[in-house]
Image (cartoon, rainbow, N blue to C red; front, side):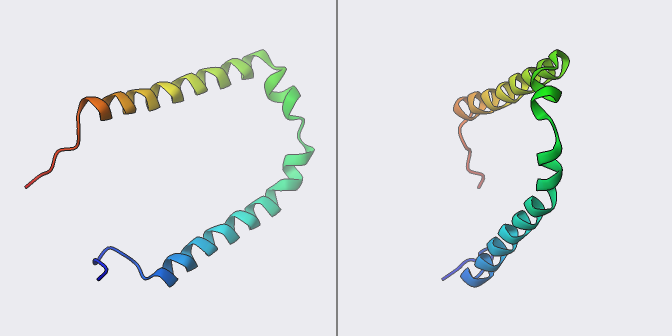
Length: 80
């Protein structure tokens, strides 16, 4: 018997298919603009943009690492 928070399988399938259709429409609309840009010259060859990307990746790794450390240090507690 499903709980109150679970949706019927056909509604979940409908929501997933709607998300996939939205992704396809988004890619269809954005792809021409994406192809026209010179990404390598704009982001990789530009030293300021490259350093910002590196800092962003380091911050992202730091946040994920801290999350994993905190998950290992403090286990889930069951509230009664």
